[in-house]
Length: 254
Image 1 (cartoon, rainbow, N blue to C red):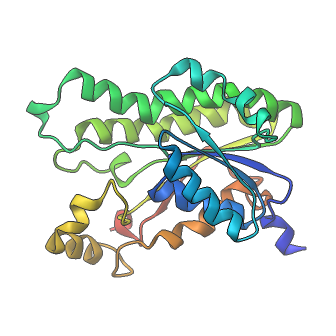
Image 2 (cartoon, rainbow, N blue to C red; image 1 turned 135 degrees about the vertical axis):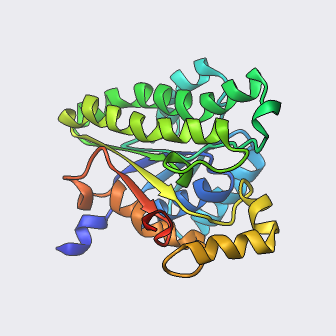
Image 3 (cartoon, rainbow, N blue to C red; image 1 turned 90 degrees about the vertical axis):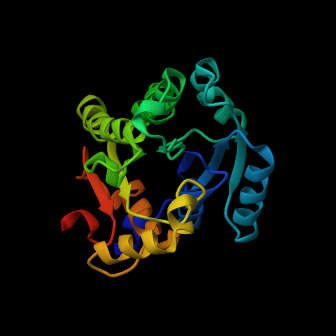
């Protein structure tokens, strides 16, 4: 039946950056579709709050407090998920940072940290989890790209460079792992209200210009991401891999 194409019952999903913003929203969407969601980020209190919201809806959620800067901790995540009775079939790499700095003010630490969060963390986590996915002959990796994957914005060199890399990393992941039943795709959101985009939305004129750049005539609402997340995590996307889906109201189509 058609509804079975979007049913995530019996699946487990690990979502990074799940304490706020897009990560939290994607975790709630997958939980609503039936997945047992493991919420991963540094701030345990925020994770517990998000997990409780999910549980109150009747869905399953667990909390995994983790320092994404600790590569050893990333490599142990499969075992830690097993302790939570969750072997992730779905990995959503939603953690992110966006240092908005003029190019002359970017220091090496800022550059390396931005690349680490957006490229190294998804790669190491995927390496840690694909073995289990391969044994089950089914898996999904969903990365988060950006408008800046294809557009250059002011004061965005580290972030834009990292997000451009996310698109190519997604293709490379698909080439490596899709023959084993693991589909790898990316979501590229337009302008959505989150902690990262607060400086943009605080500027009313800029926010309005961004809305006018879309074909729909408004900026994104977080619930606009639910459908694409469930689609890419479910069997409905069995023949889609290596792709970046722009959810931007037509911003990049102009």
